[in-house]
Image (cartoon, rainbow, N blue to C red):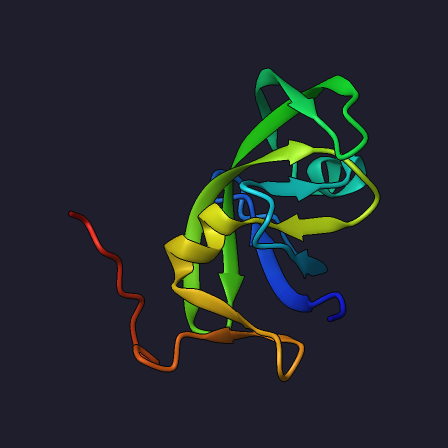
Length: 124
């Protein structure tokens, strides 16, 4: 099993600033994470500080920024992002929101083949 990366377009819907990023798709992470330089380039506002626990058990206070539009293929969602690390990370919440899946056999992020044209979401 390897790491899965996806090409995303990130956009600040308030200013229109956007950029392409290569993000690790990680279904074990919940939220979107972006490096500091991405938050600066997109001119994202700090909404609050959040305490996060990293894989090594250490806790850190990090910025939570937004709003952020995330686009993959024909899917979009709006999210906030933790400012953390040196690469973008796409977590489970934005993946669920966009109705995309990790295809481990092909080692890539894919649009849900059961709903290829429009995102489907269970609401009950």
